[in-house]
Image (tube, rainbow, N blue to C red; front, side):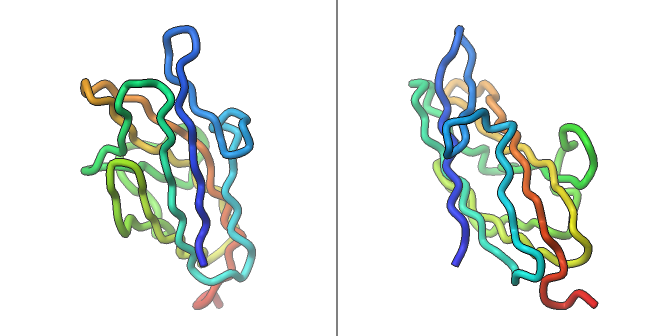
Length: 133
């Protein structure tokens, strides 16, 4: 089935700010995968209201880890894998195996001039999906 999550970028006081699908700040958004659910596809989409030509950074569209704070470079978990990436859409597979966990991630977004404008919400895995004993 999959989950679709669209983040909207807009300008505020000369800076790019990100809003979640419910209009709240993207940093407070959590995409939840239910406990015991099978692997889930998540499609992240960008809505650019900035005029900056924002797009996913194709060569490294997402950083993820299972620790507090902002994630370091790369995918530092066995729970997330990138399955497709275009300028306006990033598709990942969330394995949802093992114990319940929270993954901090950063969507890497770049403007047409090369400037970076990351978006950093959270995935909350219920865990216990197929293959977990």
